[in-house]
Amino acid sequence: MIYSDPQPIPFDIQDHYGVVPENYWRPEYFTVPKDHLSEQIAVARRLLGDRPGMRALDIGAGIGKDMVSLERAGFEVHGLEPSAPFHQRGVERMGLDPARFKLAMVEEVEYPHDHFDLISFGVVLEHIYDPAAALERTLRWLRPGGVIRVSVPSSDWLVNRMANRYYAAIGSGLVANLSPMHTPYHLHEFSLRSFQAHGARHGHEVAFHQYFVCKTFLPGWLDRVIKPFMRWTNTGMELNVWLRKQVDQAPDGRTHP
Figure (cartoon, rainbow, N blue to C red):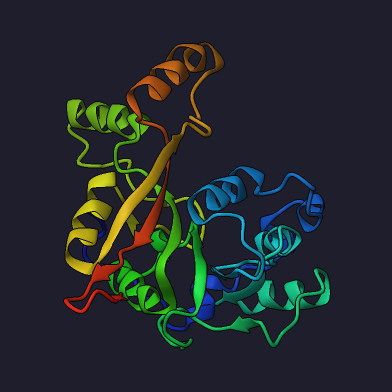
């Protein structure tokens, strides 16, 4: 894991999350294509089985696009969003039920234990001051055998490694890690080892993982060379991990989380 030290702390949480959606996304962002989130939903079904009545929680839901897709796929969907403007657009423009779509931070809200089959952190953990504590909190809400999907920036991203070598060579003292370009800022980057180590202590395992190359911000001619190499070496920008809550065997033969 890579993190900033000291951590930037906003005077008000909306200074960090209160970005106006229309300034952040193009107008077409407010539509939800039929294939939106389809690959991730397919992974969830493979890991959970295709049972009716499964319950999902989307943390950092934004305007609720993933919630819409999960509901289309048959989940009973709940969501959290800390940004007041995004939450408002989710209710007013996306038609989300405010009873299930809460304006709240994951550190402050509560749900029943063993309540959800699927919990999703889509590009969220990198913005949270204590991501380990957030995972531990949500594991309580996840039923045994359920899965948490996490999408985060990879600390093994090749482009950052290349940039860091350049900065070191010219003696600048800068690093390319974390995002200084726009709010909300990234506070952490993660490796697969981060989640494996956390799971060994807190009762979950990596059930599946994959890397996505995404944009490199490099010239096109270099893209044609570096993107295949990044796929081959698992050094893309984005890491997706699926964490399964383990079920322990009790001495009397019953199972418990």
